[in-house]
Length: 303
Image 1 (tube, rainbow, N blue to C red):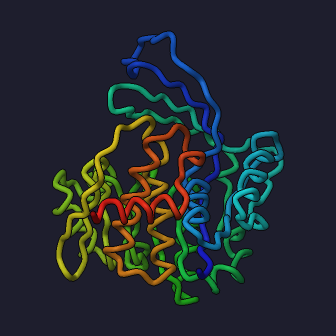
Image 2 (image 1 turned 60 degrees about the horizontal axis):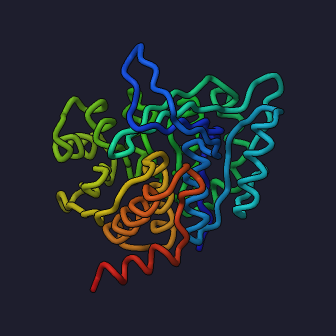
């Protein structure tokens, strides 16, 4: 397995789980509280490491208990954290997450933190590993300058570039043209294009310059669109417990498949199976499945 570099955010997730999500202005009592390691890029790195990849994390944290715990957790997963920079005077990332309802949907609020202070210079400091990577993965919890720098270094080194456009924002065409695989969910795809139909949104993003677009569809799997047209990859039916981190699980496993040289459709199918397993467990990073679980699930599905 070749190296995958993840550029982006690390958070500590403070999670409330209740029978249903509160409406604006409403208090819902008798929920349960838990604390988990999270952050989109950090989650993706853990997912890829459990898929068997060599993962390097490039990010920023505060010199506080949350940041130290985040770095220690990534190290325990075998992830290289030498480029996980400390930003003195800034807090480490924190996300407040509400989970509820029959389908365990979630609402997430993320505080400004050291994640927002990751600079292009911080990313350039990781150029030695970025230039040797098979895949570079980023998201939008950090500055757009940091993301664009990661994309440029990936291109210079011949690496594939996977971008999860979340939290969603307008993306420059120069960045989209460097994207090997863009992986939005349905909401993000609509926000980027104005099209509610996932296929129409995927085609618009492909025409904007992305070589492949994969729109994740939750319990309905994923839609892959590229020069060969649109293909639907279904998801196995599961009973969800917590959907937090499912999209990150998908991206981490997709990156692992890309690094292995899997045909993209097979890499997407494996990522869908991994994400389906992750929603049956609580927490973001703790829910990420191991390689043996996903491959066993594939054999079971084939019968």
